[in-house]
Length: 603
Ligand SMILES: [Ca+2]
Ligand SMILES: [Ca+2]
Image 1: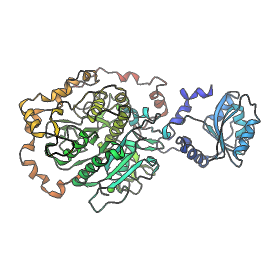
Image 2: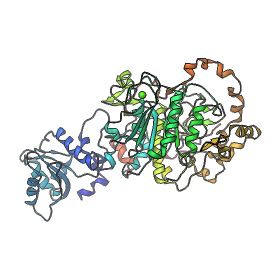
Image 3: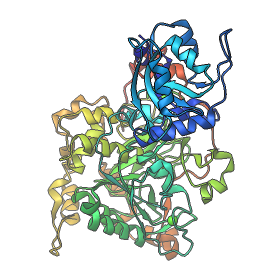
Image 4: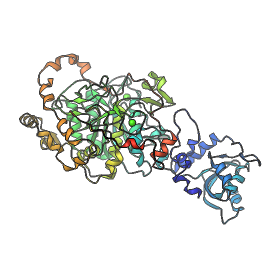
């Protein structure tokens, strides 16, 4: 019966959730990666191999054992335990002989290892205790189920966004391009999956790797596989386009060059998702902004573009979303949700600095939200982000940050999961799947989280997806200059929008929207506002000669991490009791809160 404990007992947590919450050290290192990682796992065990005090009056326990194993073995001396044994000063063959000397009807060596002096075996409880006292056995640990790359993460965001359900299956997610400050590619978070690193920066103050730290963090959230810090798509390969210098600044020309590179190399590297956790500092109409045109080209070429909404909101008030690329109506623009200490979305609001409202062209943004406050992820210890925020460093090489920058890569990784299940889906369909299945956030201000928080598991489970850009599609045409690919016919669209304020409703006419948990009719009427468009200043020259007149200011982009956010502890991590509930094995104490009578009315 011991083997069944994984489905309802504490052993499962040890296996799946090896990495403790902040500050703890414990047997997490036991639960390493599959294959090669198992070895690393056991090597780490040696480092942790503090002898455990005997819970028994007999001779002393000398081997390191998985916490709880000895008590289980004592309580159930005849039950079977699947364990891995490592010799302290004896070889594999010696272990095999010891086990063979036991009653062979109840004992079985399952594997003999060559890379370590060890075996995997089924032993009775009393045999476990005997060998633990032997003195020549270094460790006896559960032969626990090992999920993909030992993936675990006890932060709330993987549960809220639904990505942790995919960590066990290792789906063939496509490559994600990260247009950011570079990536510290050699760290264990990426397991050799950084397929290319391209320096696109024309600024002088740019270190190799990731001098800022922002891109490593973004890549870790999208596709990390570090022990205890699993990201949304931890099997994806990553391509790093370094556009940002060590201060977190990028030139628009370099960001557009990154889009060019992705377009030229997407087939070579299998890139189907591109993450832009940055925004231009120049307010613009998407009809004229070159960065918007560049990301649209990617979108029309089959690359899902995910953009941060920006962190320039103030005290939860609507800010508008006037900056590229988050102001582009085609791409997926992501706001930052504050999970507010629970995995239910009913109490969630947008982070107070998460930008939202209308673009200069009248489109409501963000489209969707993901957790983006007090997120912990990887950053080089020597990066400027880490050095500027020593109080936010939670472990060597890991830091807590807030920003729409870190909500976006959850969606980018989620898009990769959707594409693994639906490889023929277009970017429009991926966006539609994300929006259709979003969780409502009735406590959030209207528009602040778009249609709600992404639920990647539900999006993956769809068999078809509506097109939220359907009303825009008639204006996507062949490049009139003859280049390969498609472009957006801005003049034709503007004429149509001026003549018919309800043109956008075509995006929401698909009957499937009615099954969304959010109020699709409200969103349909709010998603494009002719009034916002008519009053937008893009149609005159005022914006272009206002504060943006300094050319050097106007041509830079900024990373979307929330500069003013101080670190916070606690509520963004789940404890073991809650974890048990999340894994469906007990009824959560707050289960009733998952249904609510509130309705969200959009303006
Ligand atoms: Ca850089
Ligand atoms: Ca919550």
